[in-house]
Length: 262
Image (tube, rainbow, N blue to C red):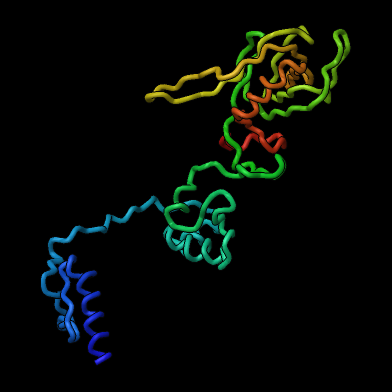
C-alpha cells in the first residue's frame, strides 16, 4: 500500500511539472525511437543552422623560420588557444587572466578580441612596458609652436622654484618629454601648453586639443624636455590631466617609439 501511494505521488509531481510542456508521464518506460531515426514530432529539416563559413587569412610567406613553423603547427586560432593558451593556464582560478588580470583569455572569443587591443595596461612600472605595446603619443605645443609627439610625462611633487631662481631637469613640476625639440628663446615664462590628440570622426581625421595648462614653463635638453611649475592652486588641474590619460609614445622611456613602423 505504501509503495502504491509513493508511485501515485511521483506520477502526480511528474504531471504537474511536465504536462505544461506537452510531455506525458506513465508508469511504463517511454518509447524510444529506433537508432538512426528521428524521434516522432521533430523536424530537423526546418531547424536553423548555426554553422558559418570558415574565415581564412592570407598565409605567411616570409622567411622567418619560427613564424613558418608556428603556422604549420598551429594553423588556426582555435588550435593556438587550445594547444598553447589553455595548457599554460592551469586549473586554478585567477590564472590565465581569469577575472584577475587583463586581458581575459579564458574563451576563444575573448582570446580573439585581444588582437589589436592595448597591452601592458597594468604594468607596475614604465620600464615593464614592451615596446610593441606602445601607442602613438599625443602631441604637445607651447607658446604657439608646432605640435610635437609626447614621449612620456611625469609629475614630480614639490614646491616650484621661487621667482628668479634657476630650475633644473629634476625640479618639481609636470615634466613633458618630447620626441623632438620645441625651440624657444625664453625660459621660465607664462604660457599655455596644449595637449592634442588625433580622432577619427565620421571618417574624417581631426586633431583636437583636449587639455590646456596655463602655467609657468621651463625647458631643458634643447627644448625636448619641458617642465610646468605646479603651484598649489594648479594641483587639481594637473591631476585632472593625468586622470584623463595622456598617450605616451615612449611609455617605457627607453628612446624607442614602439608604435612607429620599422
